[in-house]
Length: 201
Image 1 (tube, one colour):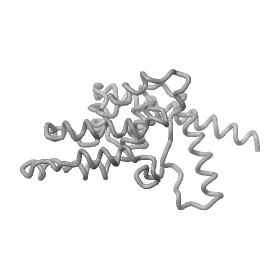
Image 2 (image 1 turned 180 degrees about the horizontal axis):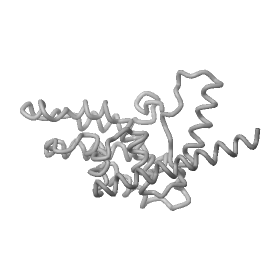
Image 3 (image 1 turned 180 degrees about the vertical axis):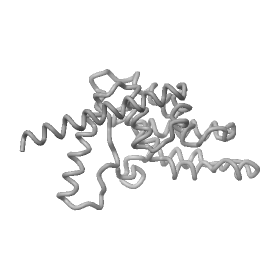
Image 4 (image 1 turned 45 degrees about the vertical axis):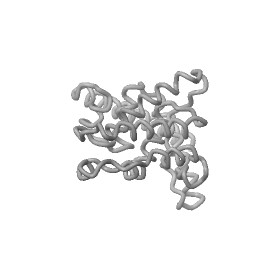
């Protein structure tokens, strides 16, 4: 995925960054990263998460900006009891929920799979990766939403199960169960897809 700050699609976020870039106090700096550090490290995670949580393409910049406005406002209260990424996802989830309420069901597309296609790959490799991304998007969209969310956080965002359980406010064993079931369903779907491809050849 291209960087919205570089390609001109994230001007609103950039303005918010400028307006809300006051550093945290010196005594908290050793424990809690500064706002700019959090923004630089986790911008793409928040942007991807907002998409996967159903925020419409045209609202992604605004939603991402809203997340980081909340981050700046609440950063001084963050005690580090959870990971930054876990905390950010919780905020993104709430912001995305508000944005989803503003669009009709028919405007909400399938689960986006940004970041699976490298800008450095060649034409043929790029086409193959895009086809794979589309297949993955279709398979993920067919999963139960609760299982899909756990699966994406574990397999794509590489979060640990305890982190996911905390993000979603779900019992740890339930989270493990959802991930295990999602993996089984995903593998079956992949097997069906490969069988279909084989039959067409």
